[in-house]
Each structure stands twice: as structure tokens, then as C-alpha cells.
Length: 473
Image (cartoon, rainbow, N blue to C red; front, top):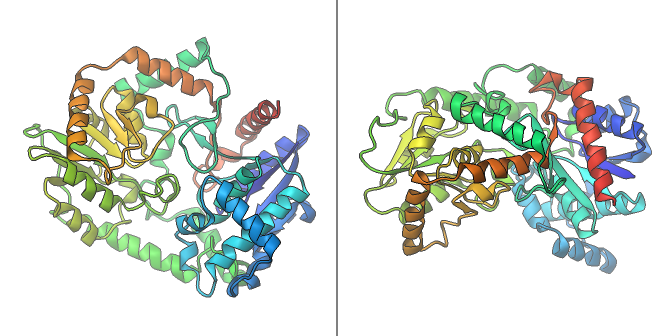
């Protein structure tokens, strides 16, 4: 049983003990490293160099155009055509990659795909695990998919958030089915999660992780240390922006956050619903939930603009900023939103659950708020297709293709759903969701230091082995 992990800027230090536990149960572990820093880390952890593909070793080839041989072109075309997402799209989903100077991005994509495929096939690797954030992860998923192998992004199921599932590929359209029929324990967990949501307004654990995003964080010191002492290590690793770039971004974020506190930017939600309203929950950007999972709807302003065209007079759209995203967006962005007819910009720290209960419709690109609204029995939709679609009014609604007459019918359905929801159906769905999941936290040591505690590592690794064994049958 052979599996690989793709190193990730913050998660690699969690992946390593996770992989060691899998190795103890007989798995052979391989690595795709995005750069020298993580290759050195893996070597220091005792992983053998022959098991590591360091992509930065091909960096000098990325600086000029690539003329593949006929055989290479055939391989590239096969990966591109059979993968769940095209290779050029994989390059475009990674915002950081597009900022690299002196790289030929087409060359990067082609060589990276070819070398990852060679590594996977030479070592007969059947399973790959990683995030759904960076181009190397997305390209690895494409390679595995094109060769009838498995790539999974383990991720929290959001509610209850202390459980995770294996999502095939880089999207979250579905969860791989582990157990078709929930048992009594699954139902009890689901009922407790619904009680926590409905009666206590409990939020997922990850909601609080990045609150006050501009506060000083311990891992920033480590970032600066690596940038100062080993700048050459990041020469061909786009996941490690220069220290100057990081400082500039954090100063910009702090400036935007300060400006967002000016009076007149946000408003409290009106106490009375004089007009029906839809609640649009902005999501944090420079994050995979928008850049990858939300693809191709990565421009939230344009999505809101398209939605505005569909709503009739008499309706409003209340756009609520995510508390963790204060500092991400400029005043100009907010002012452009407020210029749209019928749009209100609601203060970030307003009670979201209260607004979900009041709204005639809840909208997000791929956000947890749409899941929460669905579990509360309120009409909600996502712009991209999501794994929790069974409790949504619409799962994957494209506002750029909808007609106003079709949308008028949708609003009628929303009104019915708001007053007549089926709690039994909701509980049944959540119990099924729980049945496909495992206990354990998926995060990174910078956000949750306890993530690498043996108890959590064992839960996650043991679940991974159980899951692999089921796929291997």
C-alpha cells in the first residue's frame, strides 16, 4: 500500500507524524515537496531522499519556454483531458503562482505534471493526500485522476466540525461514501450537533482561528527567520513569498482593517423587515474555499452584481463581511458594493444566526453559512455545487445564466421552504453525513498546536488507513 503527501506551507509538520503512524501500519510513504525548505524538513524527520520528489529541483527549466517531445505532449494531453480540472486552470487557481517573476507558467505546469506523473508511476503510488490550495496539489490531483488513482483532500465536515471526511479531488462536491446507512451513534452525534446549532448558536471551531487576522502570530517569526537565513531555499518555491512581500501585505491588511472602522462603511442590520432580504455572506479571499472550491466564481463582487440583477424591486441584498476577512478588502471594494441598487453592507460582527433565521434566502459561494441555514430549515443556496446540497434550496446556482422568470419561481420556493421545513429530513441528512466521517481535527500546528498531539494524530492516521483499505477492496 503506497501513498504520498504533498507538502503544504503550514500543514507539513502535521503530515509527517500522520504519515509515520500510517507507516507503522504497513503503508509505504512518498512525498512531493514544493521546495528546499520542506525537503530539508522531511530529511530532518528521517524520511529517505529517494521517497521525496522536490519540484524546485526543476526550477531553472521554468525560466524558459518548454518544447515537449511527441511522447511528452501525448502525456500532457492525456492528463489535461482526463483530469477533473485542466492544467491551465490549475495554474490560474493559484493566485500566488501568477505573481512569480521570470517563470514561464505554461512550462511550470507542463514540467510539474510530467515529473509528478513519472514519480507516481515509477513508484506505483495509488493514493495521494493534500490540501486543495496550491498548484502542485491541484496538479497532483489531476495526475492521479488521469491515471485512475486516488487523490483526497481530508477536511472537516464543518458541522460537527470535530469530524472530518475524505473529499475526492480538489472540490467539495461530494464526500466519498464510507457507510451508506447511519447507525444509532451517528444519529446521536447528528442530533447533538443540531441542538448545539439551533439552541446555542455554536460555530465551527475553525471560525475563531483567524479572528483578528492582523494580530501578531508566533509562526510569523519562523517565516521571517527562514526568509532571512535561507532566501535561496525559496528561489523556486512560490508558496514562500519574500519577506518584503509578506510585510507589505500585512501592512496593507492592517491599513484596510483600520479604514474599515470608519463610520458609514458598515451598518447594523435593521430591526424590522420592512422589505424582504437575501443574506449574502462574503467569504475570506486568498483561500481555497474561494480560489479553488469556488472556481470559476472567484470574484464575489461580480457574483453579487449578477444576483442584484435578478432580484425584483422590493427585495434587498444584505451583504455581510466575514469577521476573519476584515483587512482583505479595500474601501473602494465596499463602496462599489454599496452602489449596487438594493444592497446594504452589514457590520461583520452582527449575529449571523439571527440573520439566517430572518433572511428570505441565504447565499454564499461555498460557505458554511449556507450549510447552517439549511440545517436551521431556512432556504439557502450555494453558487458552486457542494456536498451538503441535499438540504439546500439550490446546489450550484449560476446567477449569470438564470433568467428573471426562473429566479422568481426560486423566490416562491424559498418562501414555502421558510415556513415549511422538514426536521426529520434534515436530521436524516446530517446523520448520513456523520456516517461518512471520522473523529479528529484537520488543521495545522500554527493555528492549533495540539493538532500534532498523539491522540489526534492516531485518530486521523488510523481513519486514513481504514479508508484506504476500503478503497482497495
